[in-house]
Amino acid sequence: MSLGTGNIQEQKKLKKLLCYNQAMNYIFYFLIVISIIAGAVNGKLSDVVNAILTGAELSVKIAFSLIGIMAFWLGMMKIAKKCGLISIIAKIIKPITRKLFNEIPEDSPAIGDIAMSISANAFGLTNAATPIGIKAMEELQKQNKDKTTASNAMCMFLAMNTAGFQLIPATVIAVLVGIGYKNPTEIIAPTLVVTTIAFISAIALAKLFQKFWRDK
Amino acid sequence: MQIISLWALPAIILLILTMGLFKKVPLYETFTEGAKDGFKVAVNIIPYLVAIIVAISMFRASGIIESIGTILKPILTPFNIPADTIPIMLVRSLSGSAALGVFSDIANNLGPDDYATKLSAIMVGSSETTFYVLAVYFGAVGISKLRYALIVGLLADFIGIVSAVLVCNLMF
Image 1: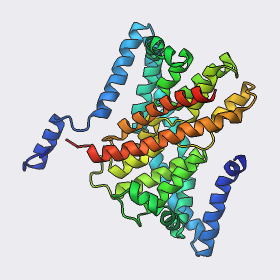
Image 2: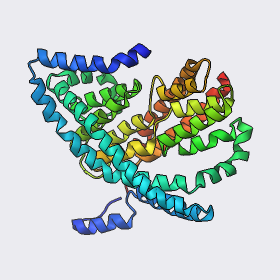
Image 3: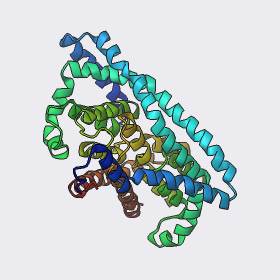
Image 4: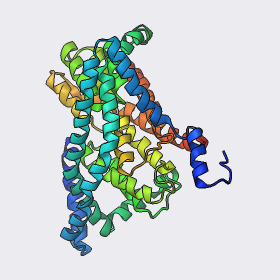
């Protein structure tokens, strides 16, 4: 949709009026409003109020627990970048990434970071995958025109991430072992099939939406 | 597979450091230079995490997930989906720790031979917490307009649930 030739402020107003990209606003609003109403109906309103405090505490805990490991992997990745390792990895997987991330330059460091992050996730190395993935997002952000709006490449990368492709579901197996499951490894094959289906669908969906999505 | 998991990290670290040494990269300086950003990135995420995690914590505490479970039960039973696994489908995209908690609960109460234990194991093992991932990654670079990222994530989660039910039906 054309926003006319008015000044920037007018354009901003118009964008607001058109409810430009409001999904997250609605989700935030409805999650909280539904929680309060349902909490009142179920007689759990005090639990809902307490959840504000515990949720806020948990967020800070998560963020702070990331600092050290984040610093470690950002340091490692800086060495990997300087010695050319990242660009070698990027070259190897070029045929795939060229199709998936057609909007970012082939020699961008983002490609290598994305590859490292997805492989770390596949091996269940979440501690390494998150910092490296965030670094990939920073590289993608450098090529992003509108710094507050997700680019197609970011949406593709996060589609791959939210699908959570993992070779071994280690935590789940640990729980199964704990309850005396006789053959916990039998869960690996079906889980791998499901996670692969979800992963491929996520990539296909991201491609599809990239083609048909229109920012109003 | 266990050997690969054990050696993956040490191997990556060895490779990075050795190659850095051979290419005469000043290892220590470069490492600390990169590590400096760790704090900044972690702090940048906080507002996005607070928004998402507080909203989801309130949602879980309100008891609505149980209510939705009761409504869905008669619809899902004909598809060979045990009622115990419904909470997992509902919280899977919202909270990883909650999904794991519900799964441990099912596993401990119903035991290793129950179909619900197997189905929930597959559903939890094959997923990643969509809302958390989006909050962390978009939060780290300050993006608040997600465009289609959330829809794609949730649709893929839904496809994951459907295929978990199908695969579990076929194999167990």
